[in-house]
Length: 128
Image (cartoon, rainbow, N blue to C red; front, side):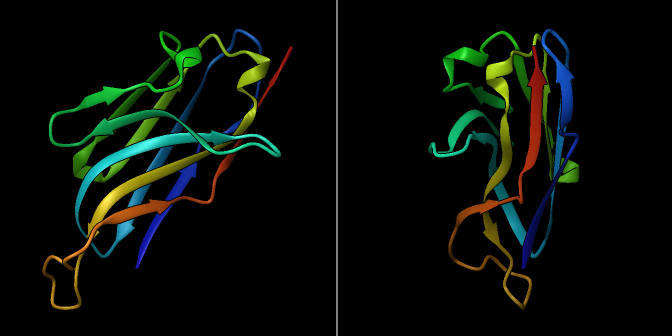
């Protein structure tokens, strides 16, 4: 089994900062990329930042976070971080961590398939 656990959410004032962390553990053979997504009530879950662990290449599909959010990773720890600065009330959402990975088989080998695995989410609330 694979588990992703987020931490670091909470309440911040507009203009403030928060840092989210996520660690993947369990039967993992290889992680290709990790990402952060966010979702507000009644809306779809959108990716805000993505990082490829092999070369630390990053993507920020969400224009509103460019220049304010920074994604980073520690491949040795199977961890990904999201540094959020200059927070705005519209950043309020549940933030989810994901990993696109290949699980490890019971014998310890490549399980032969890959997929996206999700954390349970952490609430970020930004007050004005």
